Structures are given as structure tokens and as C-alpha cells.
Length: 308
Image 1 (cartoon, rainbow, N blue to C red):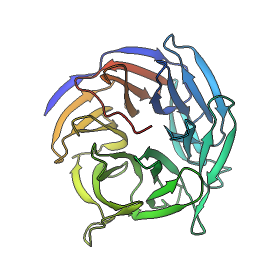
Image 2: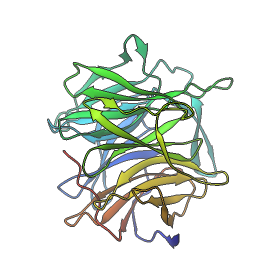
Image 3: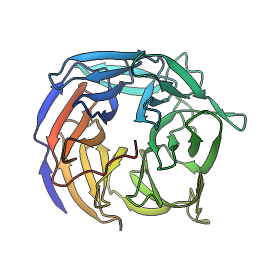
Image 4: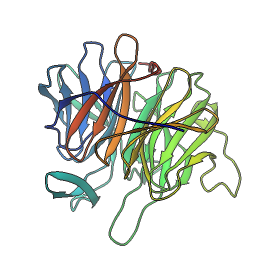
């Protein structure tokens, strides 16, 4: 396993716990600010433009087939800040469930598409990825309270708000989600277990579920030793899976077979998200959330172009 240190340009340090970066064609980067409750555009100069005040806790985002931005809203966190370093500590006092929102990037208009599946509330939608058909997979992290931790789920939904399906259950804090280059495998990372899981896709919104003793129906690709935590992920063009890693902050890179290939160390422990952009898809945009930063770094290989 190779180790290196992330070296690049800090585009801004003025974000309120950023996640969900999206590299846009004009060179700007969209991010959600979980603590700030908004969707923000970061210009190449570092200037910040508020796109929409979505409220609560926007956690992940993706561009859909209609050009709108789809936001996973976790319903809000409580926060603690020590020496300008901020971290979430649990559910917000006014937490009332999560949602999937759709934002018009030109007007800032916000629609709520989903708050429930089969009558069950969404607890904490976290990360999202669109497939080639224009539907999207998303993780529901669950929710942490002082006396309990809700388990999480994997969902599939249509972009027009017409259909939502629970595809896998009993995940322990599922966070990142991504698709293999051929679109046939869904990857999901769990935060508290620091495990990466793979699910063969068998149909629209359908996954091949492994029997017990798999705790969640997935196939285990890798689990880090010691106390580590996983956040979001992105996939490279070659199929490697890049998982934002907390505690010893950085990006862990796994092969499609689950081998840990590289670790790129970040300057802080809340290294939460990564996306790819640039003309050759070899620029990585990484959120360093504790200090509110968006980092731009050269990446050794091209990232996978998203479907939309």
C-alpha cells in the first residue's frame, strides 16, 4: 500500500461543514454546507455564491438528468466547535426526519420529493448517485441520539418523485455510495465500521442480497483495522473506489477486488468527500469539513465521469 500527502490549493476556508462536492462544467464546484443549511457554489477564485437555503442538514448532492441538483437532507445535526474546528455530535434538537430535495440551480427553487418510503420516514439521507436510466441510489445513514443509533438503508428512487424503493437494510451508518464504471455494481461505505460493501445490481432498484452471515446483504470488500471511519466515496475511470476516511483523515483507494492500494493523507481528520473534474477528470475536489475547506488537488488517474 502506497502512502502520500494531499498537496494542492485551498479554494476556500469559509464553509460551514461542507460536503457533497460536484465539479461543474464552468469550473465552479457546488457543495452543501451541512451546518449552514444551504447549497453553495464555489467559484475558481474562491468566491462563494448561495444557490439555495435548503434548511436542516444538506448532506450529499448530485446533478440529475433534468439539470437540477438533488440534495440528500439528513434533517439536521447538533454541533460542537473547539478552537475553530467543528464536528457534528448527534441529531438536532428540532430534528423531524430527513428528505430528498430538488433544487433549480437557476432560480434556487426547492422541491421536496421524498420524506418516506412505504410509510416509513427517511431518517438521514446522506449520499446520492444517478444511474444511466436517470434514477438514483442513495444512502440513509440512520440517526444518532444520546441513547440510541438508528440503522440505515440503501434506497432507489425516480427523479420525478414517482417511486422510491428500499433495496437493502440493516446497514450500520451507511454513508458513501457509488457505481462501478459498467453500472453493474453498487458500492456503499459504512462510517462507524469503516467497511466498504459491494452489491450486484440485478434490475432497476434491485440488488442481489447475500444471505446471513452478511449483516446487510452486501459483499465485504474491505475493512480498515484500528479506529477509522469512512465517509463518502467516488469511483475512478479504471474502477478503483476512493473513500474519504475520517480520524486519520485522507482518501483510501481500493481496487475493484477490494485491495487497499493507496492512502492519501489529508491535513485534518474530517476529510469527508471527494469528486473529480477538470478537462481530463484528473482534478480532485476534497471537502475538509472540520475547518470548512474545499481542497483542489491533482489526482494520479482520471475519475469516472458521472452520468449527468
